[in-house]
Image (cartoon, rainbow, N blue to C red; front, side, top):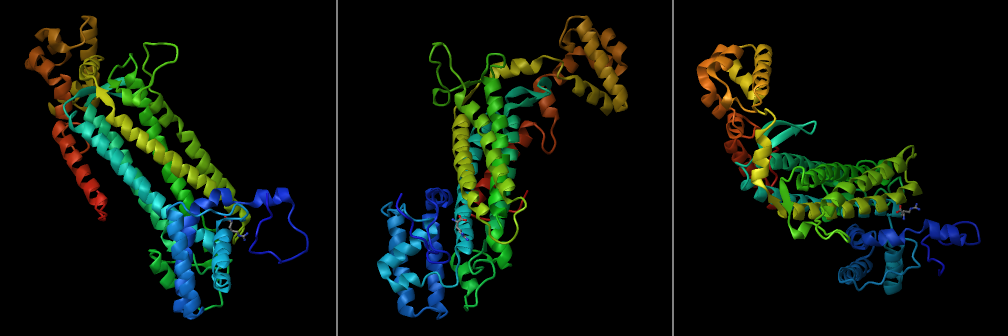
Length: 477
Ligand code: ARG
């Protein structure tokens, strides 16, 4: 490896770095991903140096023009980052100097790599965050498109993986949507923490030059300059919150990946998986496997690793900047790449789900899933709930004793023996009231599975998505 051209060359003792240490310290392989952000931040800095008179107009103008050229080259993939640079910041400054001479050597006035890297990371986080939010909206759209057609599709709802009460497939899907909406909010929160411009914090103590921090913050689209120069160069909260929001989202995706795997198995048989989202076996010709859903489930561990990496790296770090912080980028880049790919795969999974509505309905009918409805019916007739609960249980026992899983076959006497009101209502009326679709229709309350509630919730989510897609701030529901 060629010796690095260091910005700090000549500062200190004679003799170079040990080659192993030099390679160990280099972050270029990771942080060259911040090339566009580094150039963008440098441009705002250079403009400010000109506007404040710290640099003469000619030098500032030459810097801005050279940075514009670098930006265009970087965006077109034409910029060949010199692998001998210590990091991306060194590369950009060295390149400016190579192109401009002394004007290039002037760009770092009032700036340190410490506030520079903090800025670059925030700029990167802000667009990563927007990109994840967009992918969340796309996944939400896939969920709503599927749910819309399944508002009346009865399926069993589970607790403890035991059939509990009937719900609809749409209601289950909207449970996914509810969590995704929270994830979306978490990324907005994480973005608010990234929305301060660190530039002007210098190495840790600001600068004696008359920098205009407001101008730089404005130009780069930040709400304001950061509040404290020492905090600012060592603060990685926004990166950590991004990793947490990603971990939480991955946790949700993991749970849903597992549900899709369960549903696709013969034991449930609730869904088929289109060829776009299932794989074959190399040995068993008959198989279709839910590998994509499994991998979405599996990626969560990697996100937790990234989050824990960031938290542990910061633990116990004294103010202000320490080189440990260089480790932040690999973790957030990996978190972004992993969660973004998982989200896109998940949206495809949802689009490839083929509901087997007969299987869902059949499963919802068994297991005395109407027992809570029986108790609640008695509550409406004035029976205290705990008593009604016991009577619901007695009704289930009466069916079991007769080998029935439904009240339709019970005589008026058998019903009356459980409770006179049941005898009066009679088996036919009760069986109708306890049918899975009647149980679902009766849960007509906010957040419930009744079809009208589900349609209203789909409508609300669509309006939320449309407003967010247009970039409007919508008040939280
Ligand atoms: N590559 C470094 C990082 O990512 C840039 C900051 C270096 N600052 C320093 N004082 N050595 O954190």
